[in-house]
Image 1 (cartoon, helix red, strand yellow):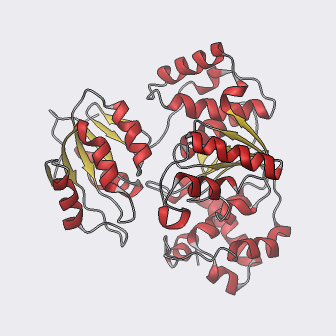
Image 2 (spheres, helix red, strand yellow):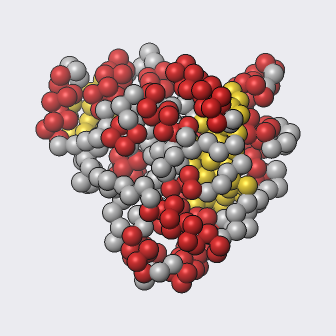
Length: 385
C-alpha cells in the first residue's frame, strides 16, 4: 500500500488522543533511526514562518537541513521540507516502505496520521545536520516532543486548541513549556508566559533566553529592513529575530543577504493585487491581520471549524470588514453554517456566500488551512495577478 492510500485510512483529527502510544512506539523502534541536532518549535502563532526562516538560513549556510511543519495547504509534500524544497514522492515512498518493513502491523494500525507522518519525517531527515521540528497542536504531549532536542524555540503563546491544551494562557503555556528539554529561546510573550518560564527555570534547571538577548539595536534595525525588503508585514520581524537567535545560539554568524528572494507560502501572501491569503485561525492571528489591514476595508472570505473561537476572531477583525463571504469547506469539523451566520449577524457584520472575486474590492482569505486550500484549488483561477 503506497503512502497516500495508507494515510487515507487514518483520520486527521481525534476527539481523544492516547498520550502514551507514540512515546511507547518510539522507544520500541528508535534503534532504527539516526538523529542529528533537533530544534523543537512550539507555541501558538508563527511556528511555521519562524521554523522556515531558521531552516532556510541553516541550509543557505551549507548545513544539511530539514523542516517538518503541518498541516499542508495543497500537497502533503509541503510537510517535509529538505534543503530548500518539499520532498519528492519517490523519497516519501522510499521511507514509507522502510517504516512498513520495521514496524509491526499492530503499531502501524494504532499510529495516528500525525504520528506516522512525524516518524516518516524523522526517517527522511536521518542524514541531516539540523532538523527543525514543528509541534502540531501541543507541547509535552505532542508527537514531536518524544525526540531529544538541543534547543526549543517558543513562539508567541495564546489561546487555541482549548479542548486539548486548556482554557487559559497559564494552562496552555504550562503544557507547551513542559516540552522544553535543555535550553529555550522565547519569542515575544504575554507577561504570564515569562513568569511561568522563570518558574520552570528555577524548578527544572532549564535555561530560558529572551530573543532580544542575542541582538544589538543596530542588528534589530537591519532585520526590520530585511523584512521590508521581503515585502512582509512588520510582525514577521519578531519571527525572523527569533529564528536568528537560534542561529546565533548554535554559533553561526548572521548574513542577512541569505534571505534574498525568500518566500512564505500562505502567510499573509498576496496572490493578486487585491487578494491576500493567510492560514491563521485564532484570535492572535486575527489581531496581527487587523494591524496589517488597518485603515482599509476588506471583504473577508471566511469559514471556521466548530472548535475555533470564531466569535472573538470576527470581533477583532470587525473594524476592517466590509462584509464576510462564507466559503463552503467540506470537513466534519466545520461549523454549522447557520450557527456561523448567526454569529456574524450578532456582530452586525454583513455577510453573503462567496461566489467570485471582483476587481474593485480587496479580499482576505482567512480562517484555516482548509479555507485557503479550498480557495486556491477551486477559485484562484478567477484571480488576476
